[in-house]
Image (cartoon, rainbow, N blue to C red; front, side):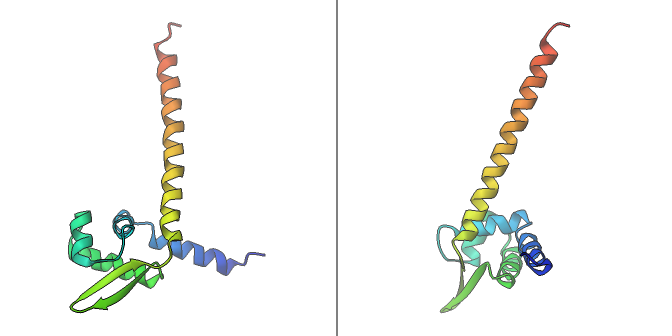
Length: 114
């Protein structure tokens, strides 16, 4: 049986991933551990904003930080996080294909003489 607490945890997880910039940060980390400046360069997001997003992701246990000399290197904790992102994109692609086919049918219907 699923308890309300499980749904609350699930909602909190989704909230941490409900920001486009955080998704960009996660995408940048797919290729491996990186520091803030490298993530900022890869995403075009200001380093200060990258740091804030990483703090949110760390708070949810999605990424971990490890100090290496002067730098702090961040990495995705669980590879399933990247799989979740892939599944979301797959669902979005299916939705877009469906919308496109509906739009095509609508346009085709409009072009037919009545």
